[in-house]
Figure 1 (cartoon, helix red, strand yellow):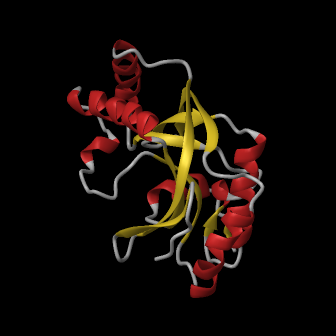
Figure 2 (figure 1 turned 90 degrees about the horizontal axis):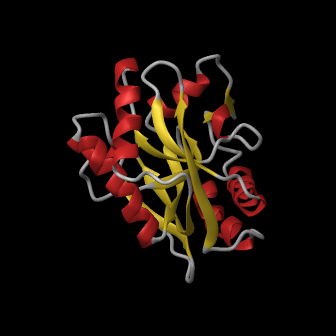
Length: 201
């Protein structure tokens, strides 16, 4: 069931959620990591400050406070049955800020019909989960790749200048090549679907 408080937009990013995430192709992944590194080297908040092996550029498709076993079991089939097939072409577009207090700096991902179809199918499979943030529901979802969290007001301009200085492009074409699950309690990830065989936990 969805979270419907007025702070749900912030809650989607502040709470450590079980999530379903789409991963980028190697070249696009490397390009995003270069932007992470540029922000970190400038002394700014950056996703690069989380060095764990599970930390990878991604597009969050859905999330919840917990995922029941029956939902886990049907996720791979829901993705396999989707009309949106992996690898899925995507375009990373302009920068955007999400939230107003300690906002997230991200790259917008163009909401194409296939991408919206994939997210809709994942959301349908996750519908039985508790506390799905409203920002991850179809029609409310803004696809993006996070670059930094918790920016202070005075850091926003600096972050934009840093990305411009390293040749931040207006758009970048790539692909989504896999879908994974992140479990924040066990602190582990596993592939749910790839551009090939489907894998489970």
